[in-house]
Amino acid sequence: MSKILYIWELGGGYGHTAAFLPVAQQLKQQGHEVIFVLKNLEYASTLLGNDGFPYLQAPVCWPGTHAMPPPASYPGILKNVGYSDETGLYSRVCAWKTVFNYLTPDLLILDHAPTALVAARSVKTPRAIFGTGFYCPPRSNPLPCLRPWQPISENELLRTESFVLGVINSVLRRLGAEPLAIMADLFNVEENFLCTFPELDHYPKRNNAIYWGPSIYQSGGNEPLWPSIGDKRIFAYLKHDYPRLDDLLQQLKASSHSVLVHIPGTTPAFIQKHASANLHISPQPVKLAEISRQCDLAICHGAGGTLAAFLLSGKPLLLLPLQLEQLLSSQNVANLGAGICVASEIKKPNFRSLISDLLSHRKYTLAAEDFAKKYVLFSPGKQALDISNRCQALAQQEHR
Image (cartoon, rainbow, N blue to C red; front, top):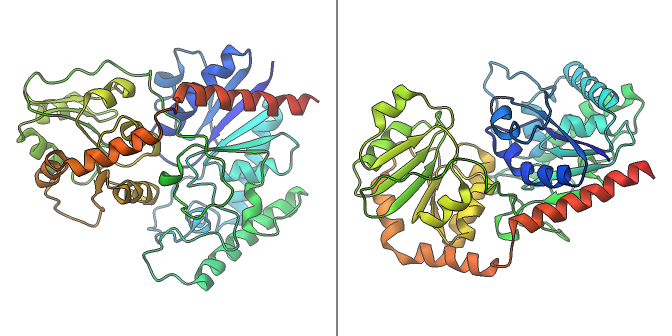
């Protein structure tokens, strides 16, 4: 039996944990121990309790009070989350090393966990990166620009990358570990589980990539309970901090459609304020496999596994990204012709008109159906099994 650590350090929501859960369940069935080290424990018991997976709080950087400039590349993201401070980064890296030393894992699974990646360079444990690819850029120098629509020069990318690389290498030298020659060397690991499709990759010019397909947590959650009145079925997965949430719910309530909305952790008072005969709100997750088959249209912020589930069911999407990773995913779907992306800069979107457009023009559904046909043989269950088998082989390398 091997001990495997799943590590999540950056990002929000419960999508990261849920994406790895099918793999963890396979590993447990194979007799391995899986321990989750998570940035946010808010939904840990909900997601992991039934399977009895142990979980710990990850060493993370507390967010500052100052507004940060929009990152132009992955090093810019790191600079905004504590990589401008060598002392703080060194402390967090040492905390990760303490986690590794106490738990003695046979394999590290790293999901948007750059500081754990830095710490792992000073240990011999095999490493695998797991996720959509946003936090595992192609191996280039400098790393690619994440805002190609903006006039950002290569020199600007190099300046930011050189600064962050210097901070990381100072920490590595203090640990007695080999420094990075270029930033891309951070991502040299034993396996990269790139869990997406080429059309949905945040980096469109990735060469020689192996795509494992999206990780979709289909079985968890409650059965969908649709309002009994309404023409079309619309499902929405929304965050409580979406700035135009109230306006969107009011326009959905005023529509002629049956609407089911999942808002994680929302309160009874909020539900009472916005629910109606044709609009139900659930604070608990609903089964994604069921909801993606039953709905006619999905509305979400653009998380990779969520939008992939609806595309694989041939359903068009209205996408409301809250941050850069979601924006890039949403633009990919819009480029496929399978949805409409509403950038956060648009202050007063006409949601009712956008929804009418998506439901009345068959081109969006046809584009989603074409995508579904292309990947009709893709099986989330087989993907989870394939990844777990590879994890098992990597962990056994540690024993050998």
